[in-house]
Length: 228
Image (tube, rainbow, N blue to C red; front, side, top):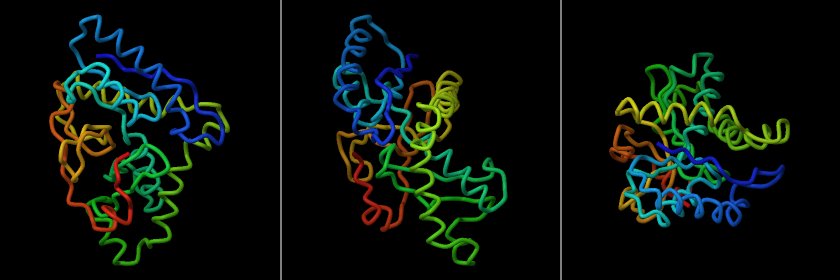
């Protein structure tokens, strides 16, 4: 396996998309070398903006789309589960929730599919244990977390490092586990020929299959699941 993290760092007040021109050149050069080496394994892209650069990496290398994928929204989803756990005062390991779409400012929280403990989050909302305003605030907190870390520490290292280690472990151990990573869509969610963050089954072949969630109308349209 190869995990690509190269790229210039994100500066304070920059979005991930501001990095695209510089980092696309870097990723293109790296992928040309990997292709020329005859490498036949799995490639994970973590450089930002991750969805765009994963697309660039696949096109430059010509690798099968299951063999090359991005870190996607695994870190965003982890932050979401942590925040929901804090709100309900339970361990985040007892929460299943996904951020989809861009690893960035236009991400979408798939609240309709979130499970807290053994209950659907929408049931908890119906029972007035959480409201729309709080859900919006939690999602905003998730989006802003990276900017906060960059201002304090100049870069984000440890969170994404843990997430990448989790993905690598899933591939090496053929875990067949569902993780929200940057996958290639070929008709799923009515999108084609793009990479975006969405839950997928991860195993020894890389992306074993994309999980097709029956998301809400708000998440699909008003939430702008536009996938890049």
